[in-house]
Image (cartoon, rainbow, N blue to C red; front, side, top):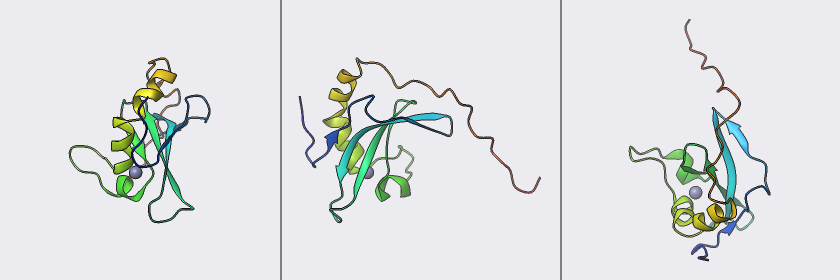
Amino acid sequence: MSSSRIGGTLIPPGSHPSNQVGGKVYIPAASYPSKSDPTKGYNVCEVSDGTTSCDCMGWTRRNPPGGRTCRHTQDYELTLRADWNALNNGLPVPHATLAPEPVVQAGK
Ligand SMILES: [Zn+2]
């Protein structure tokens, strides 16, 4: 069992409800403390498209061509992800059962 190098803790599968946003399923998988504000923290999610997401500024504000990333998702994928997958019996995140919200186009 490898542990996070920046203080992250695993959120066992099934202990938190998943969210469906934009046709994808997000399952909370790990929580990380904020470096600048001890009262805050960030959640890394497993996403049904096989990626991970985070709700920190670094992840949400940047969207480079190689895909979004941040120190939390990088740490999670290197350390805690194997444990999360083992606890989830190696099952993938289920696909969304709700249709994505229709995209409203302006000017029509
Ligand atoms: Zn992050």
